[in-house]
Amino acid sequence: MCRMGECENEIFSEPVWVVAQVNVGKEDEIKGACSDMVSKDVLEDVFVPKHVRLKKYKGEWRRETRPLYSGYVFMVTKDPKALEKALIKVPGRHRLLKADDVILTVSDEEKAFINRIAGRDNIVEISTGYKEGDRIKIVSGPMLGLEGDIVHVDRHKRLVTINMTLFGRSVRTTLGLELTYKQPEE
Image (cartoon, rainbow, N blue to C red; front, side, top):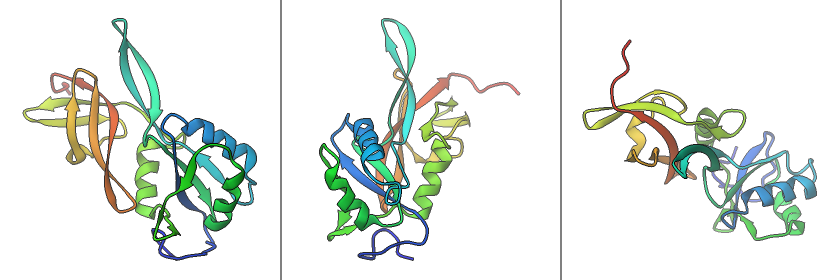
């Protein structure tokens, strides 16, 4: 089986994930248009992984959901070339990610990681943790065990930036983190 877009004109026996780049803020619009306009024979599923974060409005913290990867829509297909042709009739700016004119597919490891943190609903919930010296210790949520991937913590905005891998490259993304100041008592 070809990984990460190594094969041209490949029809896969198992569905693969491909990613379309779209205008930032248009992810859900393109997702809806693809669902409505592309045959289920070609496009088995289309989704936008999202994350929940807290944002303060007028002194009150509120939950909001944003794309995990701004400007990208994930699609599940067995035939990436047929999908590319079917996407021509979908309005809006979008293009499947390619390398040397070959459509890239998300690796099994990358799929497993996204499924692990986002779950069935493709939404990464807020994690909970505390500060232990100079380090952050996650006690619950999808970031449990990912402390080593943290590159920045913004305590005031309740956000954490982590390194993730997509198409074999390190990509930074921001997730919600509820940070307490003390280690919880057991």
